[in-house]
Structure formats: C-alpha cells, structure tokens
Image 1 (cartoon, rainbow over the protein chains, first blue to last red):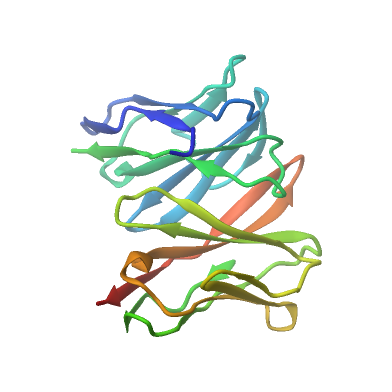
Image 2 (tube, each protein chain N blue to C red):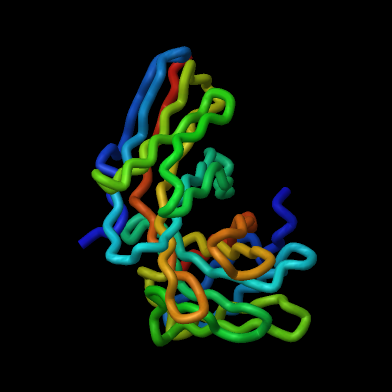
Length: 114
Length: 116
C-alpha cells in the first residue's frame, strides 16, 4: 500500500458525459501527479500540482482539467467523454514535487466509456 | 519522436535465467532523471530506481542491476536469476524540468514473463 488513495476504483459511463476522479496523496506529500494509461497511448503524464498550484503540464486534453485543493487532495475532471478516453488513470504523490523525490502511485481508477 | 524507447515489447525467459531490459532515451537537457517502474499483473506501479544525469555509477540491488551509459543514452535494467514473481511490465521513464515542475515521459513498457 503506497498511501495514495484514489476513488472510485472503477467508473463506467457513456460518451458525452463528465466524470471526476479523486486522489488523496500520502500524508505530508505536497505534490500530485496525474497519468493516463491506455492501450493506444501507453502511460502518459497529464499534469502536476504542488501545494495547490499547477507546476507542469503533459499531454492533457483541453476537455480535461485538474485542481489541487487546500487539503492537498486533487481531482481530475474529464468532460465530453469519448470512447478513446477509456483508460486507467493513476495519481501519484511526492513530498516536494522534485524528481529527486520518489513518486508513489495510487491503485488507479479504471474508466470505461461506452 | 519517442523520448523513451523500449524496443523489447515482450520477453519470455525460463526461471533462473538472467534477462536485460533495454531503455534508450532522448533529451537535450543536461540535468534529467531516469526511472524504472514495475507494473505487476495487479496493476499498481512500483518504483524501482531513480538515476540523475550526473551519476553514471552502476547500481546493484539484490538481483536487480542498472547500467546507465550517457554516451549511448541508455539505461538498461538486468534481472539476475529471474523468478516467476518478476513477471510484470517494466517501464523506463525520463523526467525533464518544465518551469518549476517536471515533465515525465514513459516508454511503452516491456512485458516480462518468467516461465517456471
């Protein structure tokens, strides 16, 4: 158990819908990262937050947005869902947001868009 | 172009054999970090090792060893005396600075099957 929690574990929804994925970092970690793992695209970095502020952006679609709240939990919002958004979404956290700190990954949220 | 290339999609070995997983990366940064992660069938991602671009010393941890060569932009991972529990997908990753944060690039993964 990495100490990073993600809810829900599974999510099934329809095209065009909007969903919110939630991540709670390890106690004491200030930085949160979001990743998408799909069969087509592999494992892709989406976005990084540190203490509520966006720090780095990867291949995150405009239909997707994220935020980190004052209690440090983070949410990833996916809207106008398409079949291709079906994937495993991972959240990771580390203390400082630096690459010198190990990232600890949550168990992931499996999103299925029908 | 891929920033991280793992040319081996799938590898099968018999238990107790040694196996090397290849990773080639591409970056223009002088400071960067390389990682290996393991994803067992249960799906979680497990951190194995991190290397910074200034530390080319090879590392050994039990049956695992890593060979970092800047001259060939490679960061290969060897498992000695493989075991069935080593069966997993292994990802190599590169981290570069982006503003005040870090951008991460993952390879496509190598699926290792260890046959008993």
